[in-house]
Figure (cartoon, one colour):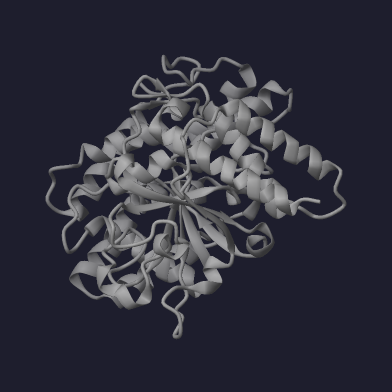
Length: 423
């Protein structure tokens, strides 16, 4: 039997979803996933008795997670109803009309207060990556060639999870490995670019988050809180989830899992993209700038510490139409950006990168200026380096792999440029 922590883990939920593969209608996949989810949920045991890597016997942690488990098991009907609501919205789309489905989805989101989940800029101001297949038809050193597909080439824009055919969005990933997996093209055949959102621009903007918030709390936050001696209880309401927020917590969690349902086939119509594309419409009407979401790809070839690792996360920024330019120049101006110029030797070391980062931090401490645009991404990248340093990609140290070596090149490009701005 599983515990609440290993049950909520993304990898386990992906396994449940993949057990639905082979079913020929998405509405039936949702029903099958619902049944698998509920069956597992009913039989979960205490985290103190589980044999998984998340097993924990700290009394306060066990008390909190046991109380949460009992509460969610007492609300099985809410779980079932949430799956059924989302299934009904999808059915309305395919059997009635887009408008009817959108109205139902809008009601679901607003009635359950699910449109207020925006990420603070400080959490995603970091070096993000994008790529396109290498060929000789474009200049890979020109950042515009590695930006969103231009407006005069809309015919090349295919159906994506959060955007429809012909509508450009800027999809970025937290790691080179994630880009490789999203595109399904080996790293040697890709031309890469790096983008850092400017904190001064995005600080007051809204970016929606689709995250596994329950797992993040149970594994990434709660153990540290308990170990620090904090006196907490599931029946206090200053930490979410808590006994008062259970219905919203359930709906948020299931919505995130359905929006990131992996695709089995990518034909002209992709049923798994219907609900994600509808939430894009809702977010645009609420003046959001983008969406943060986890990859649906398989990362089993990477072994890593999951506490501080965000390498699987992606972010899609909405693109504004420009009638005189073929790209959203305002969006481009909201980033620092970098490309590879051919001089990269792919021999940088982690030590060299950290030394450069530490030098910049020291310089910033002596500065009287607000350097958040430059320091926040650097801190995030230092954290990512630390979390991936001991990771293995196909049994090879991550930063000895081609993906890792390319990342280090971009880290140095970032450090060299940001260093110029701090004085």
